[in-house]
Length: 224
Length: 391
Image (cartoon, rainbow over all chains, first blue to last red; front, top):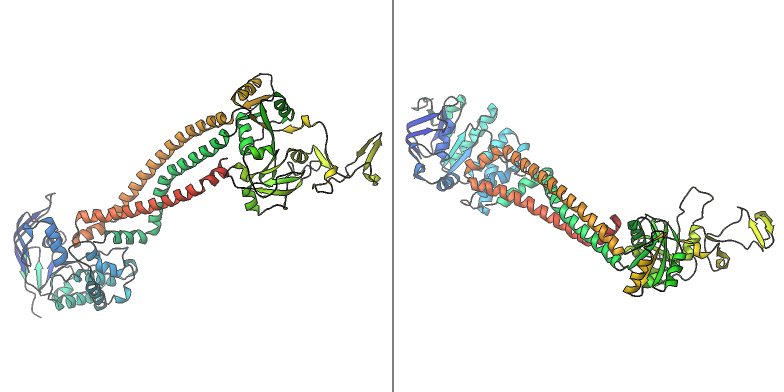
């Protein structure tokens, strides 16, 4: 699903340099990316999402070479193939829950909002337990509910890959487990690949694999 | 893509902010247009009436006060002249004079003391009833009749000039003989009476029981040969009826009775020029004015003020627009997280610009719509508004 080869990236300020000789994630695999702040975890997600272009090397996602794609095709690819989940939820204040879930369909011509999509949005909301809050605005939701809405939004276009950037970072321990349960369940149903940046070491055991970003060492989690 | 939908949701979620933005833009856009409409209508109304009035004679003093009082029945009453001015014009045989005494009011409406010639001159038609033919009768303008729900047979009472002067003239209860048809001019908001009725209102004439035949000695101060003097106990009539009309009388020589102006209608252009020449004498107590020239001079001043107002509006408008740009850019900064999320999800910068453009378009359209409604209303009520506010 994801293959990075000899990727080098440097921000224009030149203060931060990232070099990934080799990294790959199989389809349907749930991978946790760990590492200290500033080690380049979020930069990795942005490279994989095609938001940033590498200075060198190649990035292939689901058979598409992102480093060779144009800006427009990278954006189209991102919105149709990748679902993003943010630490701060990234919900739109002025839209209610249903409109937030449908939001990707309203900001691009690559996706078409149809009646079946609306139906799927309602099903996802029910699956993640926010179906009773469809007409509420994000400010009236709990943190856990907000993140579940964000997951619904990420899953609605039926992406092949979910990128989660500290998705549980703002949640209490109970909610962390609930959100991860929901995320794993939803991604397992469709065999969706999950690449999640996290600082929560107690959650690592639930991933198939952990990428320690400090040394780019790929460690298999100990069999329990 | 649903840029308009998202923009609408944003604007309707932040209702107060959107309303203030729309309000500011509407005011800035509507203000100069409203000013334009009102000034044009003022000009039209002032010019129309002034141009249809050839010459006006009054006491020396402010020509503007004379014109505004005689043509538009304004509160500024010019110094009085006497009916001798009317006689003078009649004797000259250069013009037809119409006396005007515009000083008193009923409620807030002016009472115009004149002759029936005024109705012919202004081409005023009577919608209901008859013209004033007897003392104490009045003819009301269309708007007064509508506003106060009055018709022929109803009554209006003149307002005393000094309410607390117990020795002053009592109000006169006037019977409405008719209602004028609407003219969209100052005549709609005036009450017309015969000049003699206006003199009675002013206290120059009155009605009471015949003292020579009075049996009540307590009202008699003294009796001399052929002359009876009454004391303050003598009851004066405050309404002229068919029964007491014969007992109303004016004291003194009518030629000395006051009027505020004379409308002079020259028989021809040459007569008008000669008539004007007769009032050029520096020692004369009268002035003769051509209302159109006075109004032109007033309009020239209004246009000068308008230019200043336009400049002020332009400056305020520029300052407001700059403030709006600042508010909008600060709002963008506050929304940077939202923009970043939209971009990360897969939107282009152009899409974000389109979204913001849609918000500006909706604000602009709503402001334009509001402005249009204001302009339509103003256009519909401008005649009335100008009359109430300025004339």
